[in-house]
Length: 159
Image (tube, rainbow, N blue to C red; front, side, top):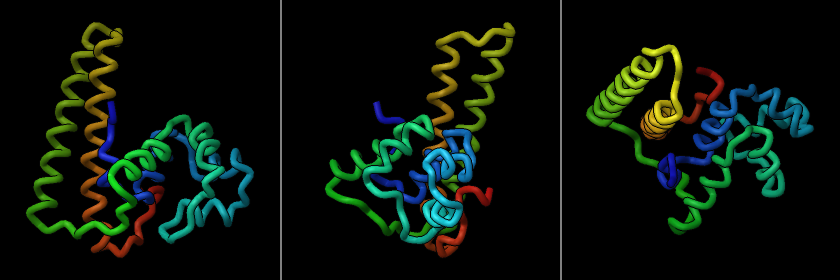
C-alpha cells in the first residue's frame, strides 16, 4: 500500500520528505554519500540539481526509506514527472490547514490512547504510523500549492 500521494508531489518535496523521515541532517546524509558540502547544499537546495540516478538507491539506504524510489515508480506509472503544480488559493489553503489540524487531532487522540497503559502496542503503533503518514501527505500537498507563490525559496531544512 502506498503511504503518500507521490504522483501529486514534486521531486523537491519527495526529497525533503525522505530527508525529514530519515531523522538525519542534510550534512549527515551528504557525509554518508561522500559528497562535499557544496554538492550536498545544491542537492538539497531549491534549484534544478539532483542526485544522479546511480546514487538514488544508495541515498535511500542512507536515509533508511524508499521515498525517492517510490516517487519515481509512481511518476512513471502516471505517465511522467509533473514539475509544475498550480498555486493554492485562499480557500484551498484554509481547507488544507483544516485537514492537517484534523489529522493532527487524530494522531494526538491515537497517541493518548496508546500511552494510557504506559505501553504502546503493535496495533496502536501501526495506527499512529498511518495517521502520521496521512499528516505528512496533507502537509506536502499544502506545501506544493504554496511553492509557486513562494517562488520555491523555502528549503525543507528551513523549517
